[in-house]
Length: 68
Image 1: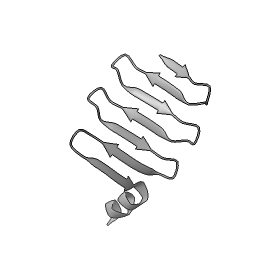
Image 2: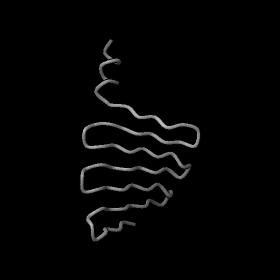
Image 3: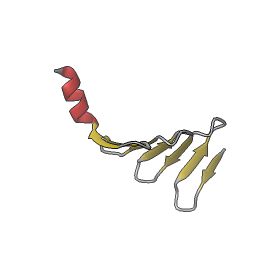
Image 4: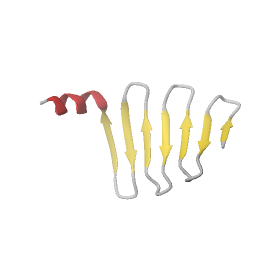
C-alpha cells in the first residue's frame, strides 16, 4: 500500500509490514517489522537505529576503510 501526503512524502507499507518513507529532500527511512530503522540521507550518511543501539556513519568513510 502506498500513501502520498500533501507535503510530498511517500509512505509505502509492504505485506511483510516493512515500511519505507521517501521524503522530498531525497532521504529514505526504512522501518523493518522488528523495529530496526535505517535513515539514508542524500549526502550518503546513514543512521541505523535498533532497540539496543544507534549508529551514525558516512558511507565514504566505510568505503575507504574497506579498501585498506
